[in-house]
Image (cartoon, rainbow, N blue to C red; front, side, top):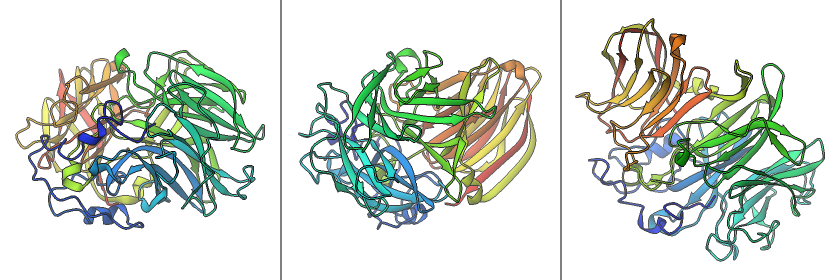
Length: 529
């Protein structure tokens, strides 16, 4: 998608950066942090910030400075993941347009910045939007075996009305790229929305497949050499806004069933649906995708998990796990993309979700769905563990723990109850907090009682279905300075929301409504990254 922000994603951008978040919090504005050198780790970036209050995430990926939005699908090279994302070095001056910046990681928790890999404005076509990178192992494009090829949307002329697909290539493992001329490899056929190419290798048929976002349609294209593309089919679904950032992959369930999954970033708010990653399970014959059901499922049900990508899970040897993938999303929303205290406090705007491992499971009714859990690499970064054991609660119980960046897990059990959950980032008076838990027949994450970017008041509490007759629910909640991610039970339902609690709001409480409950195996973990 376009690497800009605001109402038109370009027009509003220039006037809405520094100062947009100033009214949110009573912290003194600080001078923006100096730009770190490429090679800096997340930990060293935090240390490079000003000595004032910091809202930089403790264990989530953040851009070193300025602006980031869409993640680009990571690729595996030389024993590590290479993660590209849209980056605007001119964010604070109001100049629009993004490049592709690169970070590398082995465990998907600790990232090392490698600087800009694909610069913007190096050709007459301007800046780079979203796309995808592939490793051309068999030299189909002619740049050499193992070359990294990027197919990316650009809009010649500087506007947004001539979206076309262009090619860049790298012969140094994806660290730097050259353009393949200034002509598109897939010209615009005369439509407004024509962007976000996602390319995969169809090994069975010996060709490349591209999915492309075309308003309410995902177009499918074939290529032998990544340079010339042919349209073959389209998948249409309306009612969830303009589709963006398509995704296509094959995954094997625990019962051995193989499904293809078609995913998109979509805005279902107008239909009381999420504004995150919608997906369909189904079949793919190399040219056409057939969905198992007409309506999509959603990989996240919160307000702030957009532009998400999934990518291959590999072991240390590079072998691909056919039964799992990883996913990462941008923790923000275009409705309020420029509103965050990190602008004034830390000199940046751009935070990602934790990387998630996703698997395919079968529900009791026969539906296949994707389940998510935080990446296992988090376990290697635990710096402190607080084991509270079993805690019986009837009403509200404030715990003897304070923190702003942590994970809490618990299994709540009861015999008769209306609701139960946790108050996260609770203020000393108890008046401010983020609520996460279950109530009657739904699970919820509610940010209404803390500072957040949604000034409309409409997007405060997210819901997912819950069966109260189970008498139990497992919650795993990741809390950081500006985000909360709640994983319910096996992870079929996840809620991600951006939040800006005061830094002095460090309390944690358990609560029940309409009865008592036991919060079993309650454990808090802190991380050092």
